[in-house]
Image (cartoon, rainbow, N blue to C red; front, top):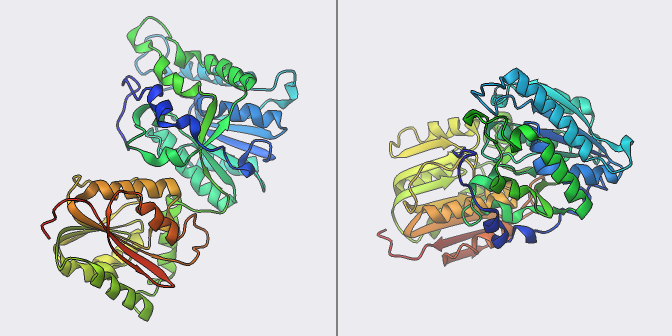
Length: 457
């Protein structure tokens, strides 16, 4: 998780505008507010739903959808040390502000179209410890076919936001719901040229009346946007430059269609898979897999590499065969079950290390420009497009001058996942690396790309 403070200067809104945040494509037709019979919005604290999805609330209500908001905490920890606003009092204030804000988002002249809400009162700042009450509330709300689940961006940088976003990703998959994720603190700590995920997101245009209603709703959260008192501990939490991210003429969402997986389901999906079958892809018995590994190793332009990083090592079969070509090898996988098998396979190789990591967001703590070879084999299509962009960027940054990136992927459709092998390799060709080798068959494609510079082999 990133480290930031609300007192940091943050990334100016002008920088996002200059980078093109106002030019993102609209959300797909099936996720438009008028298409869903129910919009179920999750919020970690009162005001998150207003900042990130206030326009969506208004537009969905105007279109006749049922809108229900589940707010996990009362946000009572926003002003620790306040001399006149202890947590209990602040919780009451913020609950009243929430009700006022949601009322402001209702369509004018239609009192019956207001959003419903429930405030769970879970501990502010500790959502990750127990999410069972939130999950129960989501299920009790009864989102049926066609409903949309809306939640904080699961990599927003705030612990409560990330816990709620990760839960939403899992429940959306289990319940067959489309998922819209709204960033909050991402706009503050991220930079458009360093975090490429946002370029794959979508926009929801706000008409002037909707934008005005959202602005009024934001002002309702007075305990956050204005000082509670003159005491330093009571300063406004959300300052002007930060709030400008939420006065755009459009809201920004990360969209996952119903029925598709991404990295958020990797641990659950692959741990279950490896528990059912120790070798689900038949690495140990398939002539195809054996031949593909032989071609992979033969395609490496160098006999030996210094530092090697393998992403998605599974049960360690390729890891074992890569090991003689490396001075040191770090292999990663999202599945703890698979890594236990891999650990047995490489136990006698002290220069090989294994690490559980859900990529791209749990990138290992390695120095930039430190890897002589990065291997990305059969994992690219288990990511959403924005996650793949981030993964490939991290790969490029990790390559030493002259370092090489090897990619190998199945070319047939991958059911239940958003990408295919051809799309993965097309994205990799946009990294600005030099092509060294291309091998393509009916079933798979293998490429080696190189970072410009002199490698020492």
